[in-house]
Length: 313
Image 1 (tube, rainbow, N blue to C red):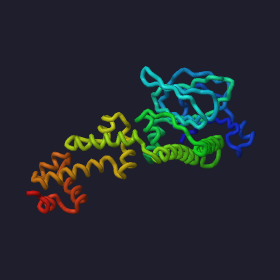
Image 2: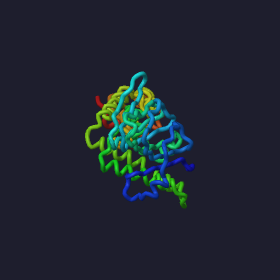
Image 3: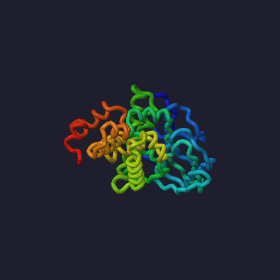
Image 4: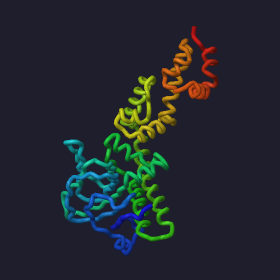
């Protein structure tokens, strides 16, 4: 992993950090809105007299943890915008291409926050390891849900992960790149797990609605080509988010669900007297061999055996 640009000024954030360490890692705010690193950059800022930036968007993902200040976040969608008065413990996940900016009201007040940028390439690399890393980022793109509030215990846990990553980056120690990667993964998974657990402790209505809509669409179009890319495009969400949604809800992939539904329809068709060849071709199986293997695995016997036993007169 490339060496990244990283600064921290840790003021009264963690009692285990002494003044020497805080000053050593201190940084002033840099107004650039582009990455110098190819993977990720992480900052801890503490500013006074912060000047409101113009609305801007990134070509990378941004994670922002608000600690202190008199700030409103404005997030744009088309020609309209929504504003959020930030409170300590607010967490913002901002996908690429979404215009936003922080509006400072009383500039003499201290403005403290963690800022974390991660490139698309770095996200894709993490995604190749596990879809779990992208839960909140894909959720932000799917539902335009950008801001969450962390309870004090959750906030301190996330803060500790930021600080551990920042301290590791500030030092040039043996295994630095490897340990930074571990800290990065730990930070991302901690944030995702906190929000996931919080949302799934009660009904997740947005996810449930999307899941039910996809189920209905699949069942109504079993005779058509159904791919993860096609379905994600139909519902304007990420294919990775759809994949994660099915795995979390049913414990199987979308592809496995489609196969099961198609086998069920084929089973009903052949027991109603439809020729086996006609049934498997109608429901999207490319050839008899693949249909035969899937059917026998699902029902414990061949299609012909099943038809001969259960065919309805």
